Image (cartoon, rainbow, N blue to C red; front, side):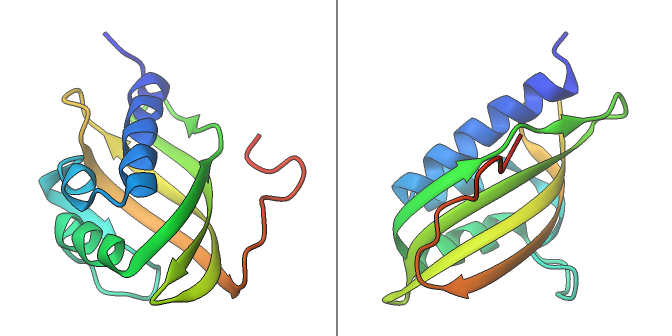
Length: 130
């Protein structure tokens, strides 16, 4: 039986790969049909698969990093991420943290995202993600 940290690490690698490639279908397949998904604390919940397809269609030239997840025995984990990209032709940096629950089938069944953006491309800061 795999641990929460192992399941989340595997999910993160698959999601990061899909994001880097702009592969919306691969990203969408990583979420359960009934995933409890909130893309920002002040947004309404939405279908994670629809969200992945929409946002990946808006982004190009993505560079994506994920930190080491912090997992609980209860099946939840938090992980920092950092990305630079072109969003609708504008350079942007996105930094955030998500709280996820990944099931035994390797798909995410719950995700809450907290993030901030700024114009331009800023690489991760020293010591970030550890």
